[in-house]
Amino acid sequence: MQFPDQFYVQINRRRGLRRRFAYNYGEIMKSVCLKRPGDIALVDISVPQRGKDEVLVRVRSAGICGSDIGAYKGINPLVSYPRIIGHEIAGEIVEVPDDETELMPGDHVVLEPYVYCGECYPCSIGHTNCCENLTVRGVHIDGGMAEYVAHPRHLVHRAPTTIPWELLPLAEPLVIAMHAISQTKAQAGEVVAITGAGQIGLLAAQYALTLGAIPIVIDPVEERLALARRVGVMHTVNPTSCDSLAAIRDISHARMAEVVIEASGDARAIRNSIDYVSYAGRIAFVGWPKSEIPLPTALFTKKELSLFGSRNSVGQFPESLRLIAEGKVDVSVLLTKTVSIDEAPATVVDIAEHPDRYLKVTCLI
Ligand SMILES: [Zn+2]
Ligand SMILES: [Zn+2]
Image 1 (cartoon, rainbow, N blue to C red):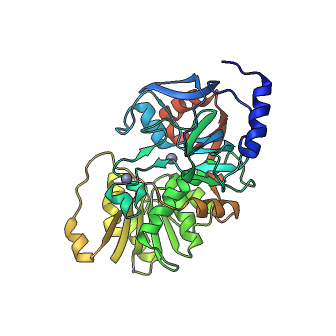
Image 2: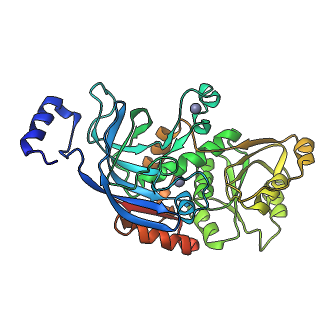
Image 3: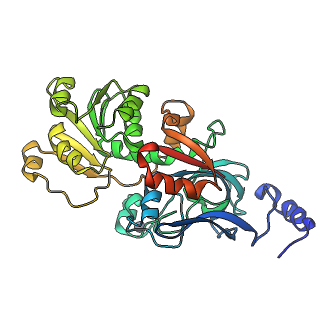
């Protein structure tokens, strides 16, 4: 249905600043949709209707994440189809509820994509990140790789306008890395061994540096270790070309790592984390292993280890945005390239076929 221009003028006048851009309800927008595993395409759908406690966001950029690639390949058991992908979402607010006082149309925002129920046991103790009924955008519910998205207002974070659109979606992987480090309560001066120098590992290393901790990044790919050194990590270890255990012993002056962040999901790295960690040490497991992994549980007891699962994040978006804006964490080193929404489907296919060529791709919309 087409409304005359006058309609928007009236609406804008009545709502004051509550609506920034005129658009038609029912207007068609582009979206990047997984129809089924292995079948991704640009699909025209209606602009979503904003719910009562939701804001409508004109999406400006969305990151392509490993879990989007898993969804494309059909190996992410949480995803249902058809599904619009994208959970690393940044944009500009178009419309807010009438009683909204914090957020305004025109604000640059990042969406916290983990929509929780607020009623289950983990939610009741503030662990909304592992809500029993969690729905994540782009996974259980439609994501943000589209021109518009409507999202609960309490899960929308205003971002400094100084952060460029292509970098803003990286606040999401950063909060995942921050949450893993926070689980272990890593302190200044502690050695933090990080297995896996992918996005999460490299961001965890940078966050550890902001805390004054001493990160050691462990990864078999030399280019990734070079990236770690570029962001200020002094100690990098390639476990395929040296004795990683001896290297960590050496760097830590025989203390071993008080904290290990397992960010690879690799079976050998998960096993090694038990050896890398010090007595009375802490390990956070943030990488997703592909299968069940046998571990020497006697060592948990002998070393009196604290082991943490780490999933999503809770309450850390404002700090992540501050760290990016102040240049304390350099997310730009992770950016392989940007693509348009038209190029996004082919890019997802290419990343699935050649994962080694990419770290982070942001889709500008
Ligand atoms: Zn992600
Ligand atoms: Zn819940």
